[in-house]
Length: 150
Image (cartoon, rainbow, N blue to C red; front, side, top):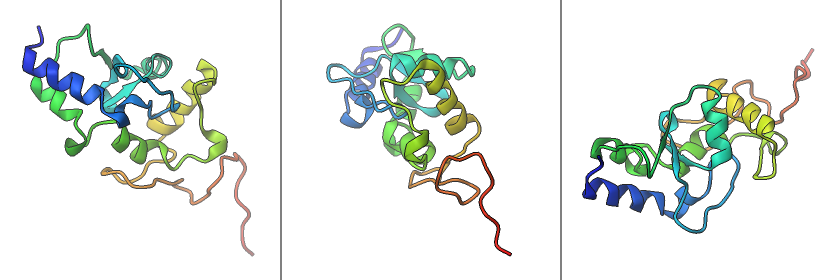
C-alpha cells in the first residue's frame, strides 16, 4: 500500500502542467493528469500511448491502482531525470513533423512512432534533455538514402 506522503508527491507530480501533456501524442489532460506512467521512460502517458508502450513490453504503472514507493516517485521528478518535459526533449523533440503523431492518430501509427522514438532511438537527444536529431544527420522522415556528394 502506498503511504500518504508518497501518494501526495505522486499526485503533485501528476498535476504539473508539463506532465499533463502526453510526451508522445501531445494529448492534454486538463483535470487530474494522466493515470498511467511508462516506467522505463518515467513519463505520464495517455491511455492510447500506454497501450502502444505496453505492446513493446514497456512496463506501465497505474497512478491510482499500483503501489508506489517514495524512491519510485522521486524518479518521476524532473530534477531526477524523470517527467514528460525531460522525456520529450530526449526522445521525441527531434522527430520531424511528418513522423509525429497526435491524439487523432490510429493506435498502429502511435505504435510505429513509439517504436521509432524509444526502441530504435531514431531521434534521441542528450540524456539530460535538449533537442534531439536523427543519428544519420537527415532532418526529414524519408526512408530513402540522402543524396551523396561526388
